[in-house]
Image (cartoon, rainbow, N blue to C red; front, side):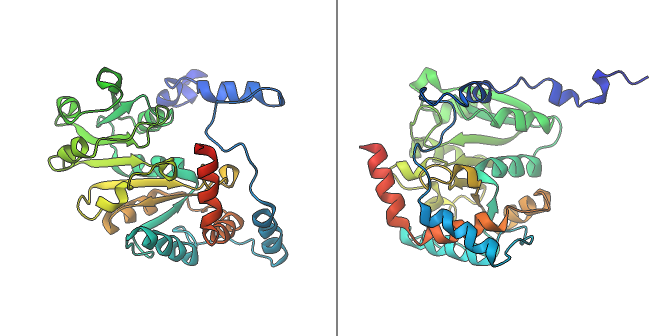
Length: 287
């Protein structure tokens, strides 16, 4: 006989509720309290960008789009990357995701089998471990605090076993803000055949180069970015996944069949033409 408890996934039942989301819910409606729960700007998206949504509704742009994301958006993202001397093929090296979080979900579902191990450098964004556990993988937490919150190559190498399938990193780190030590991480990349995921949700706030500059050198990397933070579009839910053609093709295979809504994608297209506004916001936030 199936009990009430047996109706639900054991993996799901073992995952505790998110503490950050709990605090976020508590703060809703309290305008006199400064919320430090979720990472988003304290300013609204400019009216000109929001008005773009009305325009596309009036034009009847309400259909599904390619699972990869609108080709014109991927082309614009590739064009944006050329500002940093980066060249990406918009047809097979860029995947538009529902925030960087869906990118994390897609990569883990694409690579993890039950019993696989994934090293998650901590502290970190709260969703990494639960998403891996839903894949029935074993999360190996790596406490970076013992090295001043900078994971070292030796520390990571000591955690690698024959079952290690992936390493999950975040740079700039959420919540410390620290950047990964390039020399230390490259030592790992040179000797680890598994997937190395680097979440760069806050890269726009850094004066250091993105790990995208090393993707061609280390094709086992997956780089995730988002428009939620510096671009002021948290509720629009739009992110980007960058990887080799082979890896991206598997992500697209496990990605949900109904892609990010077309209105959001049109908004992002508009936003990418106003890079200086984003840059000014970043300067204001950091000042």
